[in-house]
Image (cartoon, rainbow, N blue to C red; front, side, top):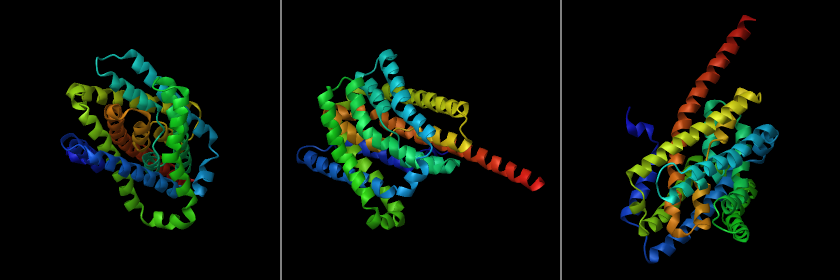
Length: 332
């Protein structure tokens, strides 16, 4: 099978962006320029997120409180516990920043777009996915920096509260403004979904370039070799497999429907690159951001590839179940 067909175009673009930052990092006066441009791009990104989220979708999905409760537990309890245990275990001698990066990854909220997209593709409960993924993203603005201060021992409590304020200003305020602007922007957003998707990706790429430019100037590739990259890939696969397995077992033992199980699996196993990198720029020293977000970047691509395969499998199952039900109904 052609490797280019397995890796999605955004993944390839992300790799090219990292290479661009490696060979042509922003230095001198360009550092301030890209910092300002990145802040503006992230504000636009979250403004568009808010504009895309309809009030009807929130109301339709909000009644599934048991589903949302478990997704929040998976995102903000199960993942962090696994991250803490892994960092404490530290089975391989790699840079401490790599373990810190995995711990940071585990603290982050879920994605919004890909969780909803995979749930829809697999035949899950899309309304609940919209509500659950959006709630996770919003809660992450408050919980993730507090968990960083609590678990990673990077900042004191007062510092974490200050960072919550900074993150709210940069991420939550544009999101709320975007949502409030829906009467004027809703139709535009609906008509230009493809263009807005490109805006999302461009914002992330800009943040990645800025973060890696800073990391390259501080010698990231002297700390990270091929063995470390392979280690990150293996750990990401194991971490994702554990979380998907736990979510699947919980959904089935708790008596959720197949559609709700799909929603739990895809909303409870994702970690957001769009939230994670901007937060890292606020929470950590600029010199360490590049290496800290490396596990997140690799995990993000792996979760997309694994969940694409899983979504197609779920789709076959739901289609087969629908055909069987249709056949039984015809016999009656």
